Image 1 (tube, rainbow, N blue to C red):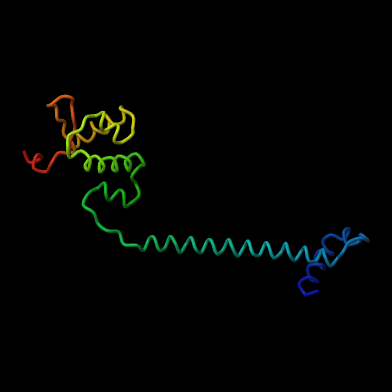
Image 2: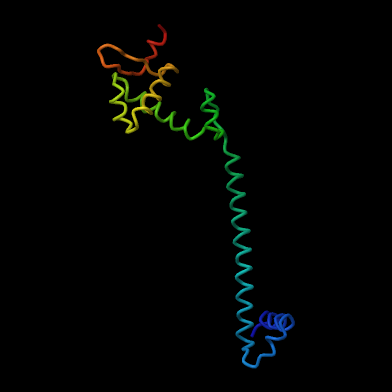
Length: 155
């Protein structure tokens, strides 16, 4: 029996004298149980401390990363992590449609391309036309949308 077991048994005997008086009590096994509980508590404290240290180190590393300057306020907001999920989604849709609508497509074709509801596609298309990313092409019918080229923006 090691010294810590004896100390544990002595502490336990002082704190719970009625258990110590039981004739069938195996003091050696009780001491081992107390040592085990103490070891578990110590390991939990050590693990908790290690996790706190790793978290602090991770956040310090994230703060130390240089932020690359960007030209637009939207990019700056994204770097700051302030874009809402809806804005992030719209930004992704904008990039997809800029790539896919080089040739004019109808609203139904955009719905099929994106796999979204007709109302959602209409809302996104209207927003992109309003911001000057897309243009409406009415001839030939039906109404179609395409990317507004840089040369068209100058006119």
